[in-house]
Length: 156
Image (cartoon, rainbow, N blue to C red; front, side, top):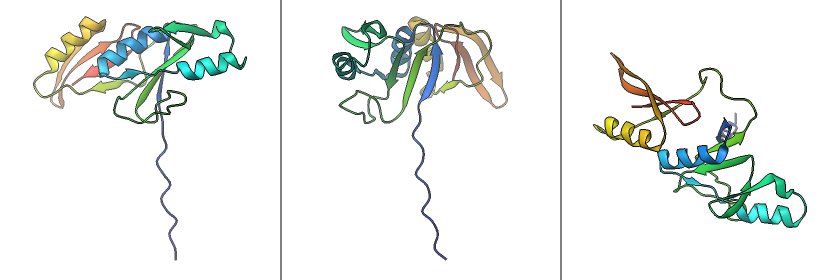
C-alpha cells in the first residue's frame, strides 16, 4: 500500500485589527526587530493601472503605501521582490472602524534573552507599550503588556 505524501505546511500571517495600522506597524517592527514591508512598487503599478484610487493610499516612510493595511516581516525571511510582500513570518495590520473593546483571544509571547526580561520590558515601554501586570507562578514568570492600541502580549 502506497502512502500519500504529507501535505505541505500552510503559510500564514497573523492579522491584527488596528485604528492606525502604520503606527502599529512601526511599533511592532521596532518591538520585534522586524521590517515594515515596502509595497510601494505594487501600489504604484495599481495606481498607474487605475486599479487603486489615490484615496486608498498614504505616504509611509516617504513611499506610497496602502492606506488601510501594512505588514511587518522578519528581515531574514524571503519576500516577493515584485510586490514587497513577505513570504515568511509576518504581522499584517488592517484598519477597522471600531476600537478594541475586550481582552485579546490570541496574543504574542515575546521571549527575551535569558536574564534580560526586565531590560526588554523597559525597551518596549520606551517604544510605547504599557505594563499591565507581572506574573510569578510555579510555571514561570512573565510580564503582561499592551501595545499602543491596547493589544495584550507577554514578555517571558
